[in-house]
Length: 366
Image 1 (cartoon, rainbow, N blue to C red):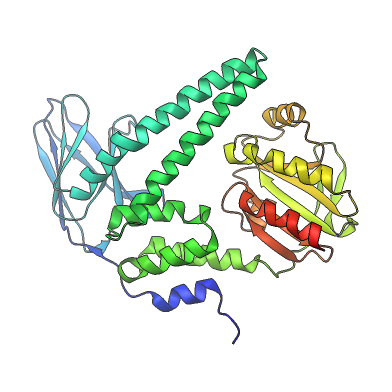
Image 2: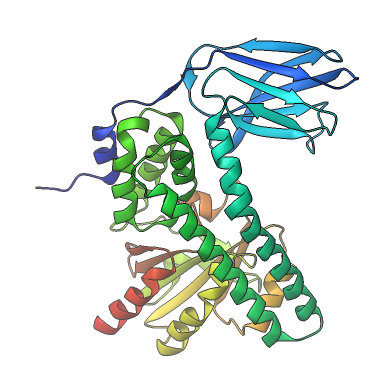
């Protein structure tokens, strides 16, 4: 029997999603000055849209009502100053207090309290490590101490791995409340396909009809449209050396597309494996094309890294947030992403750096 696409399997197991039962939100201004409050709703993952705006006098309160809707985050901001904001889950009747220190205190939302505690105890310490390591890395780079800088890059990668383990420990737990679901929505793209399938199926009963879940299903459908066995359309681009890169004219048994960025720790960590592939197989056997998604084009950090790491394979750069990019065209959702193509431009393997060992085995075996 022909296997069904991953996204079809997911649609088949979706049952329902938990609705927010809270109808009322009271915002209390305990200061001596009137404030203007803006409320935004997260309608797509990490995308806040305006929900309501109101003025609250000194020592006064205002109440908002809403109909039942899928559980999600809201963001409350005072006087349009983003330093004064609070994200919270409105899962039941709740109260927000704006105090003299220009902070919002959320009462009545156990999910918000839980996520705040997790952030304080786990996320913030690891984030602080990353910031400190980045500062030291930049200092040592500027001083020309490459080896010293590499040590801090390794420490940053270790901090990222530690954070991901912490997140996964919550996501993989059996309770699967909204916070776990929200973390899953942010992590699923980084997992192997088998883990994606397992976890999305586990969350489908409670959250299958939630907009965030539906967005994942749609994303998987897009990814599968350029998944293994699919022929990608040939493209013609200009490399950073101002040479034409015409995919349909490359004469090689295999082509490895490397979607990466000079800002991406895991991408940089994978460079030695790419170097090994590049030096082991000649151009008639394998050609590597780097497609760097950069914060700005042309990218000085990219060029510096290419020189430092002695990266000699072809490089194309494009704006990381650009709309008409190869990353968008091939539905790349995380960095690094690799595509191993055969001479007919059919995708043999697609995935993160874990597939590079398989790439080597394929080239050695065929």
